[in-house]
Image (cartoon, rainbow, N blue to C red):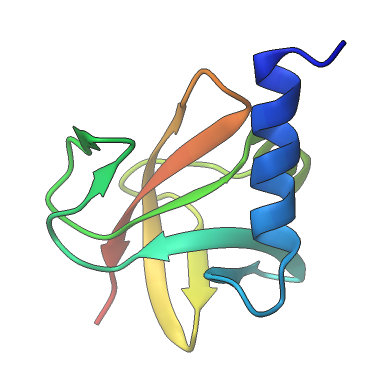
Length: 106
């Protein structure tokens, strides 16, 4: 029997793997990470407002851990669709996903 968490992870993996879906690729040096990008300042995820006044992204936590991302004012630089972002913080969503709070770089 499949648990809710297993189904959520499978659904998320399917969304991120869909080449025609909303997923993008974030480049961190030579590492590639599949993400769903929310570039607007105000957005919602599962009906809850993200506590961040800037762009953010969603990814599988397993992929984030494998990439070894570092967050903070001097966090990793992610390149998404030709735009550069600093990874300010990284939070687990409790269901095998990660919320990446980003800051656009000039």
